[in-house]
Length: 121
Image 1 (cartoon, rainbow, N blue to C red):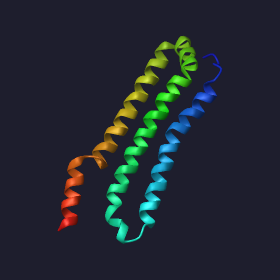
Image 2 (cartoon, rainbow, N blue to C red):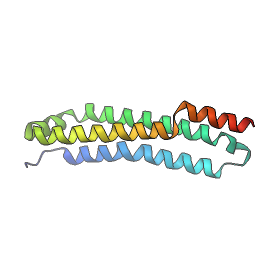
Image 3 (cartoon, rainbow, N blue to C red):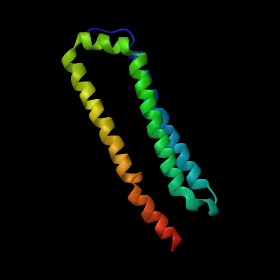
């Protein structure tokens, strides 16, 4: 496979696109864990809001990455369309399944209503 200029920059952008939301989730989790007992009633809400923000940040970063590095992506496509299609499809599937799992795990409204009802009792 030929060396394409800008792939290392693309790899760095991808690392930031995944690393920044993960860092934000870790900081939010630490904030929730060290918050006072009185504020722990809102821990679920804080976690859901931080997850929603992280997903939004991730989508924004990936979208801007695809726009910013479109020439590098086009060069990769011209070099090996089959490999590019496979990697692009696999990446899309992984991102979609990750966001779906995260949404089902923590962001579903039934979970909010159940926890709110348990807090009222």
